[in-house]
Length: 132
Image: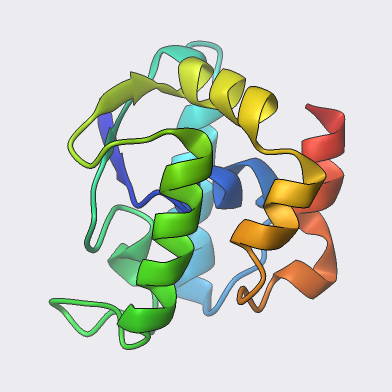
């Protein structure tokens, strides 16, 4: 199975705790996380994309062609792409992605990359980063 992620969704997946924008969003993201957290989850192939991805599928901000908050999301994506050294179109395994997050996403880089993220104040990603 191949999953598509925008660059900022790599860290969102690490920090995911079953909360989200809507019931549909939570159900979809939980399904993705079951795959990534399964016995063979680290071997799951992820393709880096610049537009709507598999996490966006059930998000209420999904306009059908873009995110309703596209400018904000593009800034988040670009910050994460640079820090995690991701390229649009690149494929990697979830295990490789987690290793890259461990190597490059320091707490300081997290606060820089996620400065405009509404979820930053809840500390979910920071707690999970410390556990990596």
